Image (cartoon, rainbow, N blue to C red; front, side, top):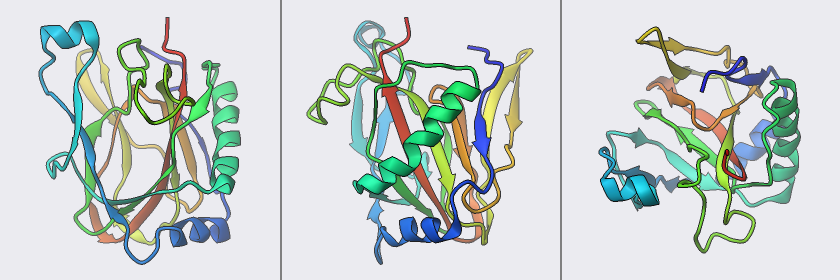
Length: 211
């Protein structure tokens, strides 16, 4: 899908005190990440019923620590940014709910390779024990908030195909409190950290699959 606006961002949107408050929610140690790994090759059965997923570690895909945040004030903070971006970017996607936000810690050498968060089609809907607010919906918009800037590397980047060639785009997401919102089907990554520690808050917003 070719969009006029492939992402929408806010510079210095979240103040430093709030960013530090979010980081502190991680505690002294963050939970080790569990990556949802999908089969690299889509089987004929998966073309009919959707790709199969399972939880497991894959250090070729991602190296980071995470913490799930259930504080209501965090939801209250992020939802207005999603709504503003959805409107101002011209997407006007039908949005219904949000997944649990994820605090992510990238230390030196950590990264998250190229991936997309979701496809928002009818084979990507939630149907699990995660709750009535998710079931029947699919990821449509993703958000990342940069919580600090005292690190090197760790660039947030998108990959697009243009005229048969892969192009890498790097939004100006450098300053503490910057927020970026983008359709979940867009391929993106966090490049390896070369110095310091990078903290971000990641969120996913759901709605009925595209028709």
